[in-house]
Length: 156
Image (cartoon, rainbow, N blue to C red; front, side, top):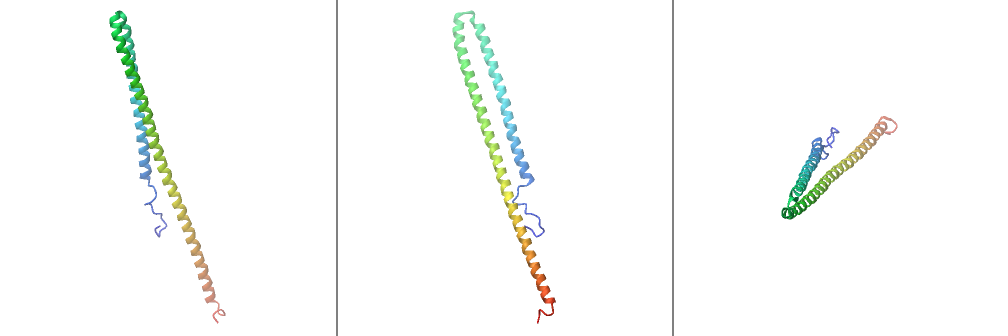
């Protein structure tokens, strides 16, 4: 600690560090929101595809041969839709888990830094109290010596 009593700021988190952590958190939150919007658009496309597949099915019922051909197409489209929905749901879960893990890691890092800073502050306070007690003891001793030297009969 410098003699002026100012604390050494090299080991405590700076405003810039905390701001950086907050920006990282906001970027992660924005990424999750962007991913959610993307997934919603994908779901809309999937629903539109399903609607188109149903319209095709209605139109294709005019002939048996065409109906048989279209039924295969519809089945494949439904399978593709199901795969797309499953993939979308899996990606959404994975993205959410990854984001939650990043947020938890950021929070844990921040908490650990905060705890280390509190412990450092406690040690500094303990050192300052010890220094003050020692200064008071020296001052009492100095006063005692001055009183002893000032007393004429004490020197004899």
